Structures are given as C-alpha cells and as structure tokens.
Image 1 (cartoon, rainbow, N blue to C red):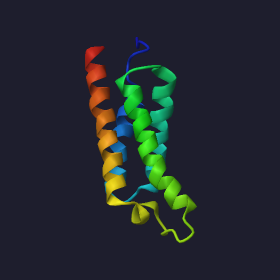
Image 2 (image 1 turned 60 degrees about the vertical axis):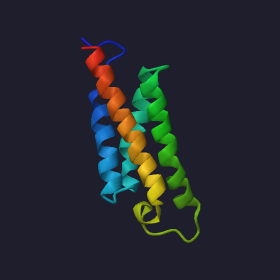
Image 3 (image 1 turned 30 degrees about the vertical axis):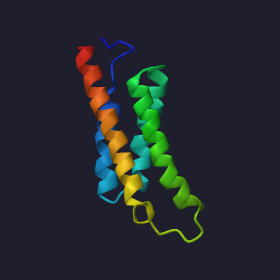
Image 4 (image 1 turned 135 degrees about the vertical axis):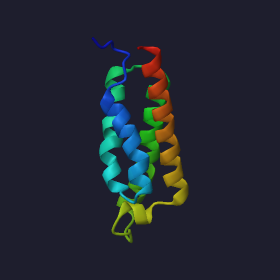
Length: 109
C-alpha cells in the first residue's frame, strides 16, 4: 500500500532521464520527463523539498525552451541553441530532484 508521501517510480525514472537527455543532446525531448515530474509531484505533494526542486526544474527547463521558441534565428534543435550554463542548471536541479526523491523514498519505507 502506498501512502500519499511515497515518491512515484515515474518521478524517479523521469528525474534520471532529464540529465541524460540534456547532456546527450536530446534537450527538446526532455520536456516529457520534466512535465511528468512537475505534474506528478504537484498533484501529490503540497509542500516540501521535492515540490520545490521539481518546480525549480520546471522553471530551469522553461527558460531555454522559451528563449529557443521565441528566437527568430533559432537553431534546428533546442540542444544546439541552449547555453551550457542553462544546461548545467537543468542538470543540477534534476540532481536535486533525484537526491530529494531518493531520501524521501528511504524515509517512508
């Protein structure tokens, strides 16, 4: 039986997928696991570190996505257009989600 404080497996899998996709030059496809994380965590957790990290990840990812989408001379892919600093920020916030989710799962087992 799962409680309301259990971290769904889809959040963990998605959190691991984000840095792999961003560093592997599949930045645009990373929108899928980022959306899964933000939606799943927002529905299940009203407060706490995991919610904060997931919202930070969503915000960090939305910045380069918006810049890419609004730029008239954008590259053919988000990964080619994304600043290395923003990519590092996305990876760092994804790691924050991973660490927090694993700690929370351990705490509630």
